[in-house]
Image 1 (cartoon, rainbow, N blue to C red):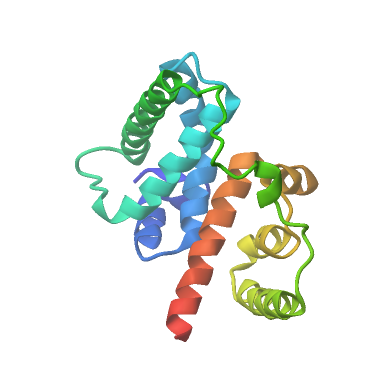
Image 2: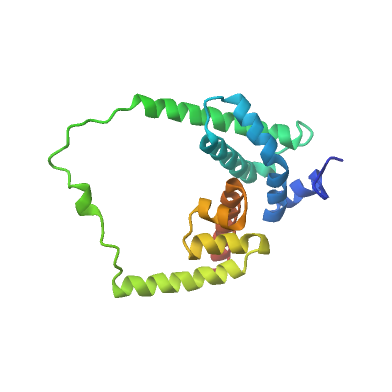
Amino acid sequence: MARLGSRPIDELIRLAIIGDGTAFTELWDTNIDKLRVYIRSLIKSFDEYDVDDVCSNSFEKAFRQIGSYDPAKSQFPTWLKTIAHNTALDLVERKNRENKKYVSLDADAHLQPVIDTIGDGVDTPLESIIKNEDEEQTRKYIEGLPELYREVASKRLVDGLQYKEIAEELGMELNTVRTRIRRAKALIEKMKEDGD
């Protein structure tokens, strides 16, 4: 039986299938470096942002599709690389499509100037009340998260920090922060659904 970290991979996959985010995070931690190397070697033109983007999206897809993983057909890292390969090709295709687009330099007279569409950033009293209620509810949901996700979720969802700021502040990989925030949001959504 293959092992990842301190737990067998089969156990981690079984736990991930039933929605255990910490098990999937352990799968992430064990596989992310090899996946980055694979993506860099696959598409030489990718910068670090592209590599991070492909890795994050691949793990997100893997988490959503973990129930379809069949260990009899392939090992988990091979399955993950297949997902990453397809995700990388999708990104290349999207970039190619974007490069074919062009922007007209002629401004349309009927369009409202962008500067007029920017708000002054001042909340109305009602908006302030709603924002405070939402923040209080968000804090309650964050407290219900597994410890692994609480601090990262609080910094993003309450303090409003950017992913890069959180990564620097906590000394984590940027993709780890992205994955944990994504997983925290999914768990919070589940709590909201269960609460309704």
